[in-house]
Image (tube, rainbow, N blue to C red; front, side):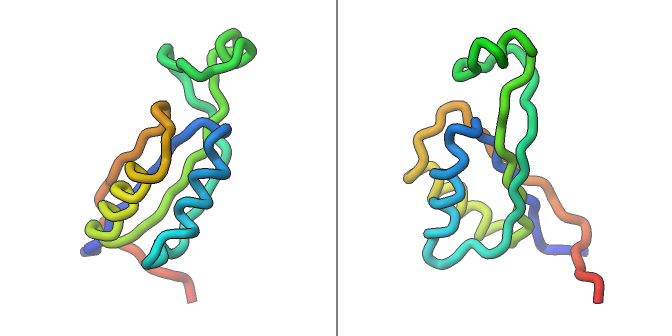
Length: 102
């Protein structure tokens, strides 16, 4: 059984640079994470462009990291203090197991 959580962050792509910079500048360092461009769907896209509203999808960046729960909470607190992105969201999920291929 793992004592880790998966932290997922979702934000408009307009905040991608600021979000990643904030994560990379954390002290102590956050560690490794993965980012990807994804599409958000739904009805509450206050920052969506006209094109996104018509297509029904909004461009988002998704960042995923697997880390200890206390570190994940520190990341969220850090972002709450440094990032102004009202349409960004985060959540935590338990990680059942984690390993590397060697």
